[in-house]
Amino acid sequence: MLRLKISILWLCCIAAVAHANTQLETDLKVLTSPEHAGRGSGSIAINESARYIHTRFSEAGLDAYYQSFRFRQGFGKLGHGHNVVATLPCNVPVCHKALVISAHYDHLGSRGSRYYPGANDNASGVVVMLDIAQRLASRLRHREITFVATDAEEKGLYGAHFFAATLTPSQVALNINLDMLAVSPKNRLYVLASKQASEFTYAIEPAFDSQIRALVYTSATSLARRLDTPRVDWLRASDHYAFHKVGIPFAYFGVGIDPNHHTPKDQFDKVDLPKLNQVSEHISAFISALSVSAAP
Image 1: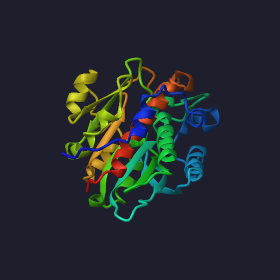
Image 2: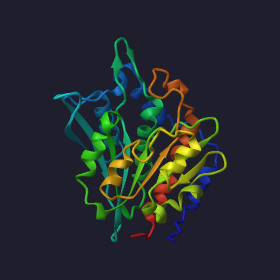
Image 3: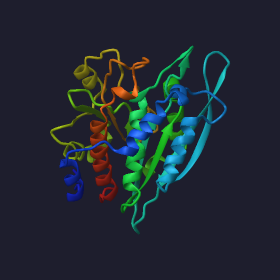
C-alpha cells in the first residue's frame, strides 16, 4: 500500500491553533448573501455566484472558464447550468495522474420573499475548495489538479455528470468531493471512499488531528448505519456519484447530517469559521500529500 508523506511544514500548520481565514470568511459571507439569492440554478444567464467563483479562481492565478450545459427540469422544460472549472497544471518534469476537486455551488434559490442561504450546503465546500486552490497554487505539483464548482447538483447532479463525461477516466487518479464541511460540535467529518481509492485514502486520517477527526468508510451502507440515516444512499447523495459512474475513484468529505439542511436557517452565522479553516487545512494537507506523491 502506498504510504504518503505529509511535510513537516503542513504538520506544523495543522498543530497550530487555527484562526479564521479572512478570505474564507469573506467568500462564505458573499456566497450566502441576499445578493446571491440562494444560488438557484436553471437560468440561461451566468449568475453572480458563478462569476464570483470564476473571479476568485483567477485571483489565485488559475486559468478558469465556464462550462455551460442544459438539463431537464419538469415536464418538457429545459434548465441551464454553468460549471466553473479551473486548473493548476503539473509543474515538474514527470507528472502523474490528475486529481479532480469538486464542490457544488448551487442551492435552493429563493421561494417567495425568502431565500435559502445554503451556508453549509454547500457554500462551505466551495470556500474550502477556493482556499485549497490558493494554498496549492505556489507549490510543486506532480499532478494536474482540476477544480470544478458544479451547478445543478440539487436538481440531480447534472453539472457533475456533464463534467465527468468530458474526462478520460484512465488519466484521473481520484475525485475529491467536498459537500457540507461545517462540522458539528462533535468535530467529525465523514469520508465515503470507493474501494478503488484505497491507495490514496490511507493518507486521510494522518492529515487530521484529535481536534477534528475524519472517519473513513468504504461502504455507503456502513456510513448510513453510523449516521442513522437508513433512507439516505450516500453513494448517490452528491457529485462523487457522477465520477464513480464513469469509473473514477472518489473520496467524499462531508459532515453527514445537519438539522438546518435545506431550510432558511442554513446561514452564515451558523458556521464555526475557525473550525472550517481547520477543515480546509486538513484537507489541503491530504491533497498536498497526493500532489507530491509518487503514486501512478
